[in-house]
Image (cartoon, rainbow, N blue to C red; front, side):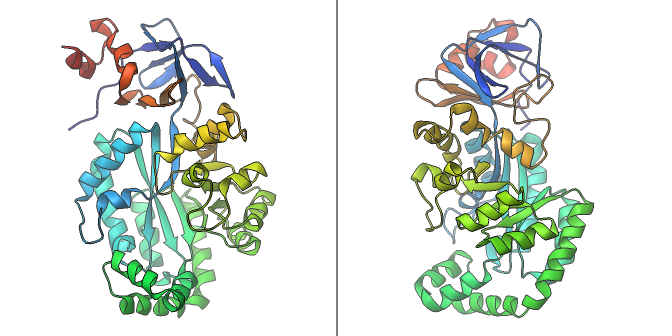
Length: 400
């Protein structure tokens, strides 16, 4: 299987287009995978919104594609294909799969991470979405430091976040044994073995600060963006800022988010938190931080469809207008990871577009790098209405 061909030169007309921070009644031209200018064959998209493709900086929903049940794993290739198609169907054009690198073992072990890196490298040439990896590196996995740096370099990993869930796990083993047993079962191990892993990791606590500084130095040398995940307080965020880990993912409370804001660190929160009106784990509501100007971008976390849903939820609740809300899932993520060729609709940038039915708010077409990665509904009829000579090969076959 190979990638679908690039769309022929086209001008998308009649839609409201998000350009320069506002919705504008104008056309979008694309050719050779890029936004361009010039008179071109037209596709009438009256009644639609054309928005920048969504950039998802952190999603671990793919874990369910790999193992729908803990004891029922599927091949990595089919899991990546399913994730790819789900992303495309919801307007995502760049997606970072958040893979664990943890003392926990199981599907979040270094072995599992490296297997996913190899599988993604093999799958990427036929991916509809620009799929990448984010590594979630547990801070106490000190003994795998050299291995982590080598994996980042070999597989060109561009984004790492530091996790420290050790004490949370230790407390769970004491206060909530049933939950701890469920966690162990998901990792395909026993509660006692998981506790042994926690104890071994706790014994390395004194080595952690120097370990993180060495990792930070290695990441800086390789141009890797890095941050931290689940900062519990401002002091933790300050520590990570000092070593260069400037991206604050899912701060647990206002103090950590405010500290990040004060130090000009971008704050990333989960789109499902916005859609559901709060955190599923009892932490601060994303909308509270958004209201206070303490959240810069939204990510899929565990549910890809939540990304466009969250943008429209912010609009409906009067917290952001559509250009501002959509920027939190497109322009802001691109800026956070210095992805200068995407996140906006402008000449010369990648043709990454989400075509949204203005009435139903359903994404009916996604264009990723100038290729149709998803097409459905009335938008499909609009594209098929082109003269036969201007249709991409796949659309010509569909019309015959």
